Length: 113
Length: 139
Image 1 (cartoon, rainbow over the protein chains, first blue to last red):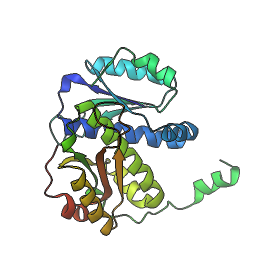
Image 2: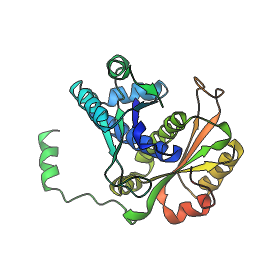
Image 3: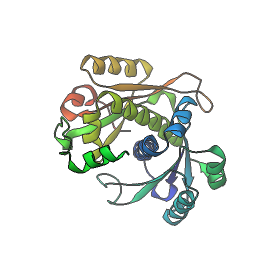
């Protein structure tokens, strides 16, 4: 599973952590409905998660589209805006759990956060 | 879905969960602040904790999970002093019957293998959680 966060928002560590875990739980719950076998394999393999950074909203949305057309589980986190940033801001994209090769192909150019 | 369960799903009354008032259900994630992890590392560790606790809660308290999800899966991230502090909090929480999850890192990056990185508590009502986590600072 990869969690891709927007660099341009400059979130604090705690905020970033919470946003990423929103994405992670939503993706995992989606997987528990549609892709039970992949979820099990991912969990048994240490539930690998990687947090990456991306320039801005438009690249994030482009990536989300690519991931969806590759039939991967995706989730965009929209913040409720109680703290730090305005309501409705898209902060993090979660992709997976899914086959390593297809995820790597999408995110290989991104840097770790 | 078979035909019978399909018909059942159309005609059965909606399932009632034993709900607590939706607004005050939240999950608290306590990060081990002694380890000095990078931001991305913290995010991934907190993600581990949140996912494993969510799946655990789905098995043990589906009603709570339901109302937590419906109220926007509130999560709060706070700082704990060190591993002992986290373990102490876990004891307090389990004495109150709260669900919790501990994350030990595999140690591929940044920190030694097996370090306790995050303790997750809940999801549960504010009143139960507040006694335990009130004096912790936001991360």
